[in-house]
Length: 240
Ligand code: NAP
Image (cartoon, rainbow, N blue to C red; front, top):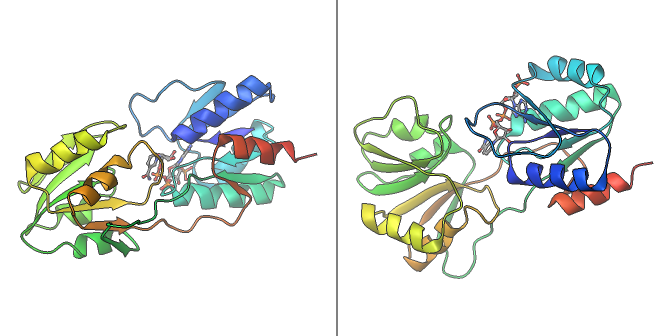
């Protein structure tokens, strides 16, 4: 089995399958995180080289199932994996954590992608941006706003109106509230990753009555999908 990883859910699935003695399980990482957490079973690192490269890998390693546990915003890998699995004639399942939904007291504006989110920020304000280094370009092009960019990996270049905070989740509501206050944040700009480890910023924004620009998830392939590692293990158990 090949797990497409890079998420906590993928690690949980690998651990769960190791306990179950589910046979050979290989987790694939793209290689973007410098010090990934430990993962049960085998790990391979680096890109496959598109659909063709992945198909070759599936054949070379005699993979019989692809479990796609990539991040909800890693859409390219998911579409390629679904296509490669289909062509190889093997099952393709997805593990995707539920998305966040606004509740009472939330003031969210949904936008379809990062460029729209950048364009939606009113001039002259200070925002907290939580995004990956490959996503910050449209925001860093906004010279008319002050941006506090909280990131795990540092960006390549930092404009003078951007202050980078390097930090790794999880974060508590108290920590997030302190960050908002310290920098005089007027708005949060984030993407709908879902999950518990990074949701405290939304609770802090609600408590401080701050508006949120929420980037919606990209479309992922239509496939049997579970919300957590247990659910995916149950899906796998249905296979002959
Ligand atoms: P992406 O846009 O869907 O994929 C870009 C390319 O990276 C793919 O075409 C593929 O290269 C390679 N790739 C992606 N995931 C891979 C994996 N698990 N194993 C091997 N190669 C992989 O993905 P992304 O948004 O850059 O994310 C890259 C990795 O970071 C993923 O593992 C994802 O789960 C993790 N991650 C992403 C985010 C996010 O917000 N996007 C957040 C947390 C973690 P080839 O076409 O050459 O095979």
